[in-house]
Length: 305
Image 1 (cartoon, rainbow, N blue to C red):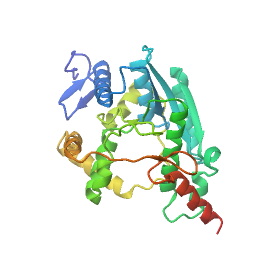
Image 2: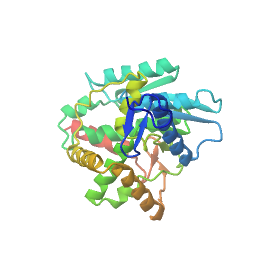
Image 3: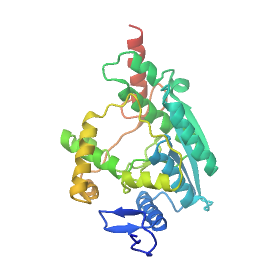
C-alpha cells in the first residue's frame, strides 16, 4: 500500500509535479490551500463581501461552489450566491442546470438562474439555426458574459468567481502566444474595479483539471459530464493535447507556463480602460455602445433579411 507523505495513511492521489502521495484529507487540504492563496491575491476580503459563483453544472464550477462554501460558510462577513446562465440549448443546458441546482440545494446556497431568451429574446439554438458565419459560440459568449455581469451586479456581488482551472489558464496563455495576440495576453491580468463591472476572480487557477475531477468524485459532488454540442475548439484542443503531453514528460510544465506569464504581466504596461455607460442599455462600455447591444443589432439585422 502506498502511504500519504504527510500522515502515512492510504494515499489517494500522486502529484507528479510535487512528488507527493496524498491521502484524501491531505489532498483536500492541498486544494483548499491553493484556493486560499489565490483568493488572497485579489484582496477583496477583510471586509463584508458577497461572492457570486458562476455555476455551469460541470465539475469545476460545482466543486468551486462547494469549496467556497466550505471555506466561508462559518464566516458572517462573506456571503456566497450561485448564478447560472441558461443559454437556451435544448438537451444540454437543462441537465447542467439541474446539476448546478442540486449542488446549491445541498449546500443551502441561493441559486439564481438568468436566461438569454428572457433578457435578450434570443437563444443559442436560435443563433445556431440562423447560419451565422461565426457560429453560435461568439454570440453566446458575449451575451452570457454580459448577462452574468448584470446578474452579479443586481445581486450586489463584490466579485464573480469562475471555475477556470490551471489547465484552462495555461491553454489560454499558450493560445495567445501562438496567435501573437499580446493585447489579449495583457487583458488576462486581474482587472481593477471599473464602474458597472463586477470584478472576476478565478480561485481554481492553480489547481490542475485532473485534481478538480478527483475532488468532485471524492466529495460526491454531482456534475454533468456532457460538453456543449456547439463548442468548437479545434486549436484549443490541440494546445490542450500538447500541454498534456509535455506535462506527462516534464511534470510541472503547466505551473511553469503560469509562473512565466505572471512575470510578464508584472513587467508589462498597466491596463488602461475608460468605461462609459452604454447609450442603449446603460451597461458598461468602452466606446458608447456595449458589446451586447452591438451584437444584438447584428442579430436583428440579419434576422430581418
